[in-house]
Length: 560
Image (cartoon, rainbow, N blue to C red; front, side):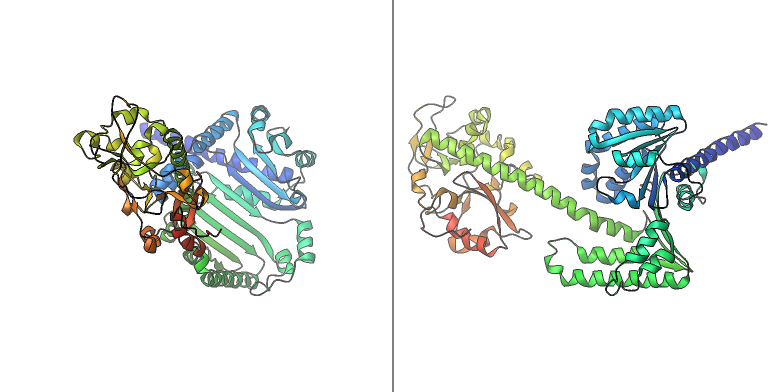
């Protein structure tokens, strides 16, 4: 008896799930049939489900590791998930997009339709959209309209045009799109949200393609307007929700000959792409273009089955894993490095401003070995001397300025390095209390070696008599402040404890080699006018200018 009831309940649940999927198909099909006309180009639909967001988060974390975790922690993901859940609660079920030939006008665009299960739910979704319209890109130019259980969104001319259409009867693309959303081979209880797209031009676009398609160069010359208009039935794409996503693309043609022609053309296109990127490999700037093209050709070259071409891919395909990493990681790394570079340039500007504030108070810049004892022995670096001018007076007061940087007390302050001295690209250095920001020490630079002289500060700071080595004055920079280096960021191998009076001991004849390191193509610098720039170690002009920029009175001409 219990077994009988359990089986009965299971059948009821199964029937409900199947019916839900069937209703989804009918909603999508009805929406496309309502909106599509003879000018149809593309129809697409996606099931509105929060699993798209959580699935993408899981996929990025799995593929990209720490980089993926950093991306998925963005507030944008939580906000998107919140929007989806809000629309789901209001009754939204699927988002359908229809693009016709008349929508290619920049002032028009595609129509977006949101399906619901009843006019009441449609009204709630419409009201939600009206409230959010001000937050949407181009919100004031958008219009929202409701047709029973269907809510239309788009540019005002587009919505007006589609809102006036009457259902024209069966549309082949509508049935194809609805069927794509529901995988007949997938158990109903395991249904995964899907995105589907069908390219199925109507009669009018096919006429235009047939008459106006240009003659293409080799290897694309066999793709004619007549072939596209008369021998291509449709192209269908289906993608299921990450993380266990699957991709299936089909191109349905009228004959095996047409399918074979398309297959050969696609293969020739990949070969051409591979040849071109290899020819320009030297200018790819670190982007693994050759690897991307080769992997993409392997994964995205279709197989032919009679008159149909197919491409399939899935989350567990090793080549997909490698292709994803090759495509996604370089721009992520580039964006992160650009952000870090911006931060480092800002750090340099803050240090340069602190230098000028120090100069205003003392009529000279600090020396590299700024804080010394009565006999001129170096104790603490210029980075410590600048603390009061970097809003770190409390930290400055904690130093024993009559003791060396590595005294038992002063060593306890090493791990309190201010953020302005840290390099976010190398957190291990910050953890060790090391910095890569140094000044160029040379008899002709803005920071000549100490000559043993010391001056006692006329006032006490936090009850201490502090002895400072007087640095140079602005008038000593006869080459011009904009041509004289103040601070340089050296390779991580040359990092120094931030409190230690240690900097870049310049050899003018080998200055470039001193700053070069494996994989390092640029150096960030601040000038004595307060500006900060990036010098390229691969640029001949910057390489030639570097020794000239180090000297403050060498009378060299710096070329820009």
